[in-house]
Amino acid sequence: MRYLIGILLLLLLVLHQDNWFWEDDTLVFGFIPIGLFYHACISVAASVTWFLATKFAWPHGLSDGAETSQQGSNT
Image (cartoon, rainbow, N blue to C red; front, top):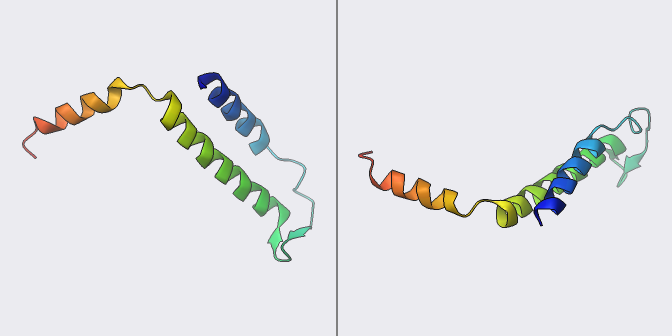
């Protein structure tokens, strides 16, 4: 699953560099410029990728160490 997340990150990196919608005047749903809609879709895809990364690729021991260090503080 970590390899899939890495591939998704690279794919998002490449797809974010859009040069093809700069000159396009097409409107999506009649009012959203295609470039803005494209970037909104990229943002949703990035959110899903980040969710998958934290769900499946996050190291298991990191959250346990953070909780124990906060218990010992006086704040």
